[in-house]
Length: 127
Image 1 (cartoon, rainbow, N blue to C red):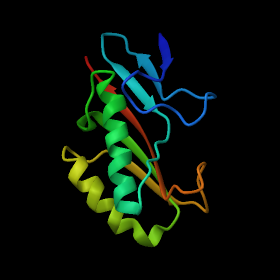
Image 2 (spheres, rainbow, N blue to C red; image 1 turned 90 degrees about the horizontal axis):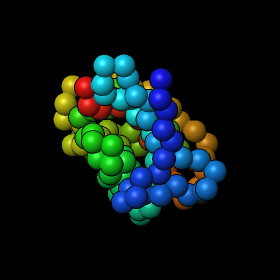
Image 3 (cartoon, rainbow, N blue to C red; image 1 turned 90 degrees about the vertical axis):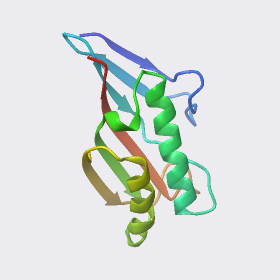
């Protein structure tokens, strides 16, 4: 099994030098699983941050030959679960294929103090 860790050029760079944005696990017979670090995005409100998060995820997947349609699992961390509908509206516009498996939880705060949402995904590309 071959595993590559990277933060691809042209995609959002990590907030810290202590982690990689993508872990790529090559699969026997072709293709790969991509494990993306949690993504946050600047924005004035949850809707704007959610859009930015999916743009960042899309850029990271594209750097490895994938799209948002390749997402298998999505984990969402919200600082206010009562605003789930705002996030769900953006997610619904971005994820138009068969819905991936999903977990959504409320957390008291995130790594960066202004973030209202963080999303991490697992995707399968190629093969």
